Each structure stands twice: as C-alpha cells, then as structure tokens.
Length: 102
Image (cartoon, rainbow, N blue to C red):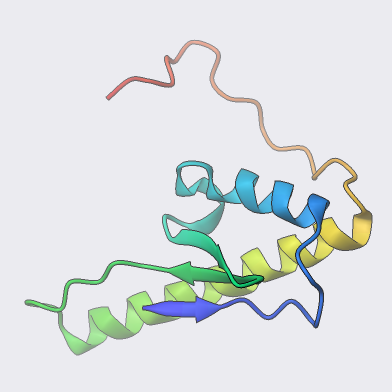
C-alpha cells in the first residue's frame, strides 16, 4: 500500500528533508510505515501480506496508513514553514536502556 503525501505544492527543502529523516528513523514517527522520496514527492508505504487477512484487518491497516500519512504530511509542512526551527520537544529516551537491545 502506498500513499503520496500532499505537501500543498511545497517542494521538499532542507528543513523538510531533515524532518523526514527524523520521522523515518526506525519508523518511530511514521507508525512503522516506510517514508521515501521519489521524483520530489514523499511516499508513505506499508508491507501488507494479504494471505489470511480479513476485510476488517485490511480496513484497519488502510485507515492507519491514511492517518499516519496525514500526521507525516502535517509535520513536513510545519518543518518547511518554520524554516528549520527545532521540532517540538519530545520526551527524553530512557537513559538506562541500551538502544541496541534486541
């Protein structure tokens, strides 16, 4: 499944690309979806195996991708409009955890 992100006719700029990278890191800012750039357009996609997938689950995942697309689009538009200002503060990571823990 793929959604292109509406960016209100904005071309990807430095602040927008930097925010996209932050969102895409480990899928944390995209709810686990993949964020890519192709021909100047951002794409948000998800792997969705159809074997054994119910209609309800398919609908739920499609709605989740649509919601993530809206959040990512808004974040990228804000980053461009703010011109590279620091994003809103996020909670600090747990200092006691090793981020490479599996």
